[in-house]
Image 1 (spheres, one colour):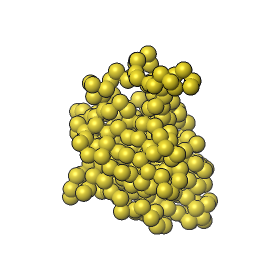
Image 2: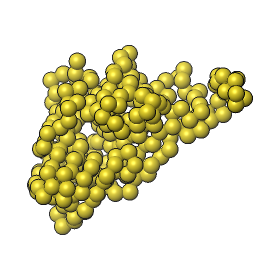
Image 3: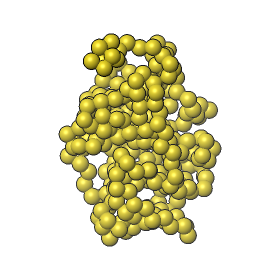
Image 4: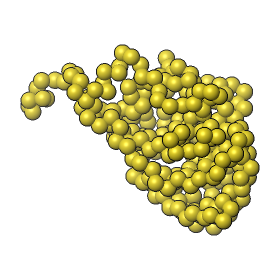
Length: 270
């Protein structure tokens, strides 16, 4: 099975580990996704082989493009805002790890040019608040999309924090553009369930899932465990990602005033 990638549950080694490639022989999203881990004091210089984004997960590092350097620290992907650099192919990015540091890396074969951009301030949207008893309340952090990135860019990148025992990417929705989810949990034994069209995967720490055209992909976290996933989407030619299509039969839950069943004895406080 190449839709649910679970080969890295013991963690990622130092250096670059590619989980998917832009030319995967099966179930190809056209997106390369990987994890890059650096030791404290290590430096690296990388030339982007296509449009690329580096998303800081944990640690302290300095990132430089041209004459611009940013020094970033992130201690928790659950409680702290993302920091990311997004560059076109051919750009040289210099990295210096002040502490042990981890990045997730996202790449596509796009060769069109645009200005490199650092993303440091990202809104933490409380999506689903007030809907169906807050059972699908989650934090959505859209790092860049067509509203704030260059029209020549082909990637969309963000994060979702799913609350313990609740749902995210809900109500079920789908879109034509290919997508990848990469998961982390507040505890190493944490897990969740990932719908992917007619299939449901039990996802755990460091898992990755590929999502294709028309597949609904609602998610839920097991009680007690916060679930993080980074999500990356690739625009299609003449068909960029925008607003997903919500499955008609479940759209009613988006109404904050929607009536839904709940036990009377609990409503009465008994």
